Length: 228
Image (cartoon, rainbow, N blue to C red; front, top):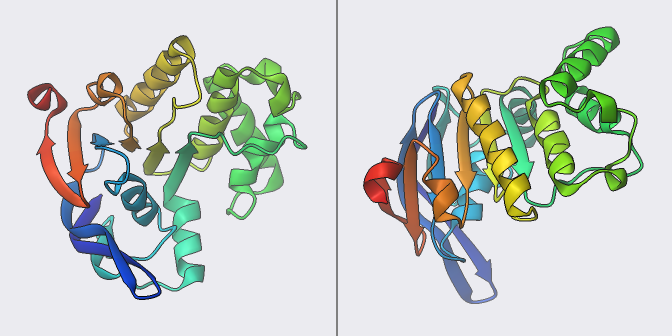
């Protein structure tokens, strides 16, 4: 699914250059559930942004499902994101002016599905996540846990092969956080490859594999049970 070779990301501000990721080698197989951990500033979010094609590396190579996507054009990258990658963010990133149904439907706007098929897929995903009764509500009318479920519904609406989650429980209380983690595990069990950034050792332990970063490098790469 994912193969990184010497992936490096540097940021320059004037004469100062900072290395956010330093020659990272990483392979994630299809269907894996990988937790990315490490202290603040270690490169976790940078790595997730590169995996999601939201940023470009300074050097190195990234292969997604066997295709080298490192130097694709912005248009090509956008098409790949739409068809293959789903995102779940800590801050939900929902549009309050839109209903739950329309927020989820955004993920299908530029896809190949006709309008009727889009509506059917949205209804299917909302039913899957227990949100059908909230379809006409707006995000501000929902609890934090419900908003995150809407965000997950939007992320999986286009049936992405890869789901990227950046601190998906960061804005939730423990009960709603556990609910979201259980949902992510279910999606992974159904075949979705999941890469999640988290500060929580408890949540990282739920993954089948844990990758710990330090100073932009992979410090530990092991099954979560062995690394605990």
